[in-house]
Structures are given as structure tokens and as C-alpha cells.
Image (cartoon, rainbow, N blue to C red; front, side, top):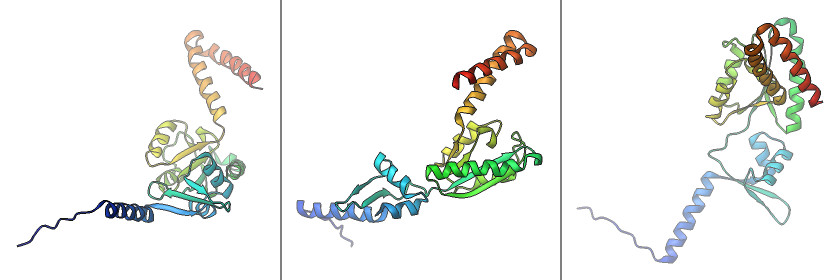
Length: 218
């Protein structure tokens, strides 16, 4: 016959048990390391890690000696891996691939990103069977994809791709977002002008509005 076992704790024993249980959780689930080691682990520069600590993006504390200790939950965070994606429509513009890539490398350096890979591709923005892009999107280890304009990634369905990636804590970072917003605005203006004036006059009207918008921004 098996007897059931019961345990009784006094208040002091219970406190010790809870403390040990909490300590065990910290040992298994929380990163405790210097800021410099944390920066290396997640693949960012020390300056970026320091900025994250100062803005509260990562948890930690500063010792009397000045050393910053990071105490981050090790489970949800994913090591940051940055990839650059550049594209041109035809082989005639192949030289622009390197130009795009260099601009984005400079951008990533300014942001403190360590670039894991640069993907160059020739193909139409409306082609949904670009093998290099599909491979990049399928690579779950890449957390951030940097592009110069939204249309460098795709002409249609950008928001769908962005939403799907965000479900896996991945993101697309667009450098020249302001120019993309202007292009979206121009498309809307053209659509309205076409309804009001017809397609022939819509183009001229849209060009006038676009010229005025660019003049105001300057």
C-alpha cells in the first residue's frame, strides 16, 4: 500500500524555497552578462547596445565601477541577423546593384547593424518567382531585411510580406520611406485625376501636382 506524502513548510522554509525557485529560473532563462558580451551575442555594435540600454529597450543595471550588466530573458529574443536586398529590373542596370548595396551598407553601419549577407538580384518587381528573394524570405535566421525602396522588394503586396514576417518577429526596413510615401500619394492623385479629367489630362495634372509637392519639400 502506497501512502500519500504531504509536506508542510513553515514561513521561513517557504521563503527559502521560493527564493531558490526564482534563482533556478533566472539561471536557466535569463541572460546575465556584460553589455559588450551582449552586443557580440546579438550581432550589434557596442554603441547600439549602449543606446538600447539607455532607452530601456534591454533590461540591466550599471555597477558602481561603471560596468553595465544586462539581464535579458533569453527565450523570446532572437539573435539579430541583418541582410541587404538589392534589385534591378534588367541586366542593363547591373552596375546599379553595387551602387545600391554600398548605400545600404553605409546606412547599416550608421545604424550599428552588422550585415550578415548582401543579396543581389536581377528581375522584375512584379515577378513573384525570384529565387534569391524567395530563399531570403524563407531563411528564418534573418531577422531584418534592409531595402532602399519598397519596390526594390516587390511592386505589389509589400504589406502582405511585411505582415507575414512580423508573425515570426522579423522585419523589413525601408531606407527611403519618405520617397515611397510620395510615390503612393502620386498614384492616388493620378487615380482621382483620371476620374475627373480622363486619362489623357490626368497625366499632365499629376505631373503639375508632383512638381509642386517636390518644390514645397525643398
